[in-house]
Image 1 (cartoon, one colour):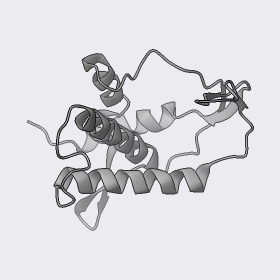
Image 2: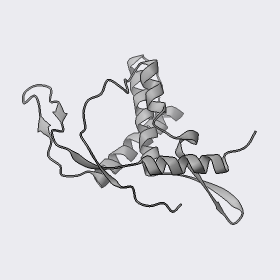
Image 3: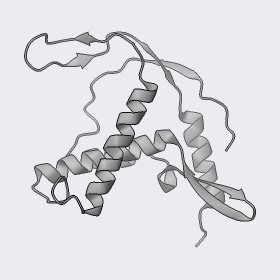
Image 4: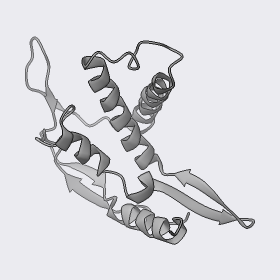
Length: 152
């Protein structure tokens, strides 16, 4: 899947009223972060189509799975940290490990201020960061979905 590297875009990372952990609206906002088909990309090779995902979409999906695990745990469900043989627990463990690896792989040394120096620390970014503009990637993923999605 050959697409150009996303352009840089300046952004300030701030707290948001969106993406709540345990509300219907928050859950819908998390789901809306992925393009149609959950960001699955299909490529044709040797007459067969093969499914892939982009790391960005994998990370966003994993963050939503972790969010769901936190909500389940808070609500007393056994699948979030209870039975180690539970399928959802294995997916949650995969996601925690995958996000850990991606943070270690892609983190920067950008300094961030600490708002509260004692007790609970809240870290926020007081500087503008150079991020990637993923708009083109989402657009290409949507085009791929339209091209390869099964027709009714």
